[in-house]
Length: 109
Image (cartoon, rainbow, N blue to C red; front, side, top):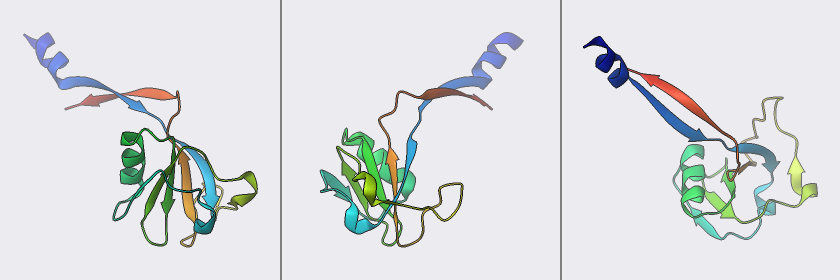
């Protein structure tokens, strides 16, 4: 009786990882294949993933999200504010969301 309860209390969820690429000036975001507004960073990555586009550009200044098939030009990337990769409020955060990296999270109740 106790084994089914333990099994029911545990669940494994597979989560696909996104790779932080860097920060760019919003003027250097490549032409959009898809875009949306009024979202947060997580919502932006989910939206781009649903559009089957590998790059998500989240504009920190206005909350807009641009999804593209390619990253920005190498010379377009700018320094982050800190070693953790925090982009400034006037920059766009760039993520590559089509990674092969994934991990499992063990959830308990």
